[in-house]
Image (cartoon, rainbow, N blue to C red; front, top):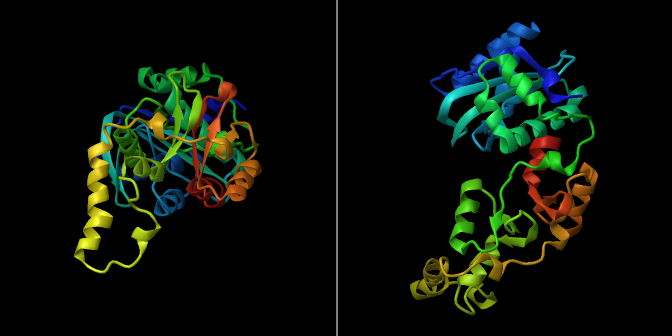
Length: 308
């Protein structure tokens, strides 16, 4: 199935302004209820229930409110393009949003539903200009059709990605830490200028590379006997980190990605087995030529497969 076949002119809204994210959800619920014939409160409850499990802000100025509704046969997709980036807050998390895709589905369509979520995320990451340039709902659907995005019911590793971030090998440790903070992640794929995976780096690697020799070792993790111990074990290592984070490069501290790598075409089960076999919280998804596509977090499995 082509993704644009799921889009309805009546559910595409361009340059619509809102006062808050709550107003956006309410508007989406109203319009989807109008088109589907479902009770407005049922639609609203489905969207807000999923938001209550954790916000559906995915970065790249994208919000993806979605939910399951009994009695619906098809997947329903609504799109809102805001006039410009808007600062929004939900579940005590703030984000900047420009694009809102709201989705309703039945649990019988759960696999296809996950593919649609993935297709939307990849559209925004790789081709947001198509969403920016459209002047009418019809033009937007036609532009999306030019990407020939297909969705089917087989869930792959690529569909489980929600963090599309990488770090260049020649970046500083400071830049890597900033990326981790911005994307709320503690592991990054390290790539070259062409996006080819070179290795991985996690927060422990970065600290280890900048701390003085011996700091943070097993002896330092015992009981603190006085304030001077606190200073030597906690304060001084942090000071050393801040002093060195601009001097060290990611390429000097990265390590092999071997057991962290999963092909984008691999099935959902393969990704889960790899995570559990090596007790990894993260996996790096790669495409042809070993190009890094993004990162799967165990929380992605919860949000997308166990509690989608």
